[in-house]
Length: 335
Image (cartoon, rainbow, N blue to C red; front, side, top):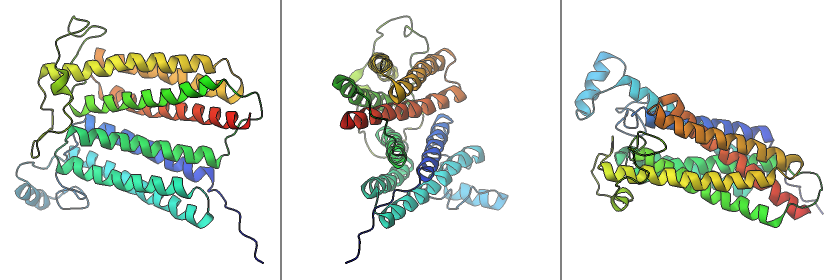
């Protein structure tokens, strides 16, 4: 009678490389969006009908004839295409992880779920272009990217068997607060994506007050209409000033909620020992850095490096929170 093979997890390095690549794709996507290059290539998946940006005078002339509404801007087009190349490479890497998982018999659901999310991400990337930067699609694309990053990071933690040594289980409420923290942070990331997609990052150009007022005139109803008509070009935004202010202020207000929630979680977790304390310390540093970057974005009127770093640190903060939650769950289950 043949002995059944024991499932073998993929090497942690393969998951980690996928995480690094995903983080790179997220940063490139933020850089592309913040550079107003989201429609640098008006078609998909190519660029003006080519796999690379048209370079020769004849190719540029033909592209301009075919897309008269959007002449070739090489700098913007290359930003968009580099992002697409990196995203395509990530898709191949995740496909490799999924194939490996099915062959090894370990992490099949996680790898398959990640692959399906990447496929949906590709569709969102296409709709971002074809629907002319519709905000709900842009925000969904951002959240999908963070979702892929989170799943790959969980795969890395699982592959490392990242389980702390046997100690007293942490307080039950601490684990509950960690899950609440994840939900709060995801909402804040979504609000950040909505703010960026609606070009509302500088709707309030001063801090801490907005145009000299703690609570300026705003239109919440118009600011949070998720679906508007088709055929509208959303590049540079379509909202009027009160609606943009509403979006911006919602992001600011929820930032306070996020800071208090994650700050309380990190402070409580610092009273623990070992990996729990280390993860909490990293999370607290990233939280303070993220708040500082957000304020700096307003004070310096959204400089591109700071704005891109704001996206990157949000991703790292999410990974730190997931790590802390993973440790708390594993320690509680083994306590």
